[in-house]
Image (cartoon, rainbow over the protein chains, first blue to last red):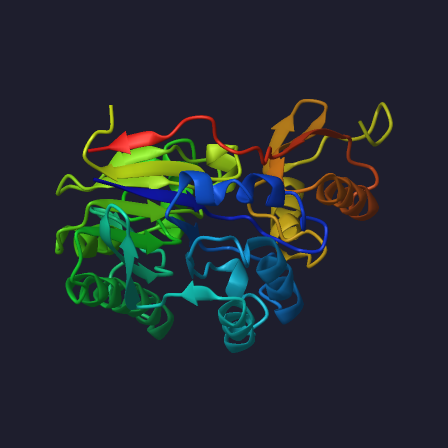
Length: 241
Length: 89
């Protein structure tokens, strides 16, 4: 049996984008069991922009699950943004998870925004100025929350949803100098600590689609500028053909 | 291209200032635009979600750096439905 997952991130919706995704989204019930959004739904994280997201991605005929991204934090209106999205039926994950009954089995999705920090051997440490320690502690707390959320789910297929990248593979194409601002190895470690089948993220507009964690979990960068279509569809489970 | 022939080519401080402006200016707020410094000016490349955003980027850069020659190679990201799926057995 197959679980069909549609996913996109970094759609940065505002008034000028409303309606652009909708024709493709109308086809979702025919090709996917769920739509996962990998953060950066808005440009500045305002309540008004969240209403635009709700109009574009609400009432689709399939469940919609999201994490927030760094853009969604810009105006310090996260509670308002989350409320607008949840009122539109969109599930917002942050260190939490949910299980969906799909025709192909129970799909568990655990999500967290994540944070930067860098990758093994080339990363920030919890040392020195309070600002640096705060940065790295944010990274670690986020990854720990993802690990706990993943391990708490009972399901047939487990998916990790983040905004920041858990591996450097899917950043190829970005300048090496900014990798520490695009993701961290601790997210990959969290993903590998659970029986995760697939990890989806966004954030890296110039990155590439495919990668794997050190533990062999498949990672996909679904940032809209990377996939260059309204969403990608993944069939998780047995091969259908 | 904006600016006039004979304008002084931008140095790396101008490049840095434009890169920061593209992210921090509320009317732009783009982190996915690359600023490339060439001999005769700057090339802005990347992709945005609407034609309006592309125009706004060029308008704001021209307004703030009127003497800097700028070439635009910014596209609008397509939003068609996918035609293929990826099988992950």
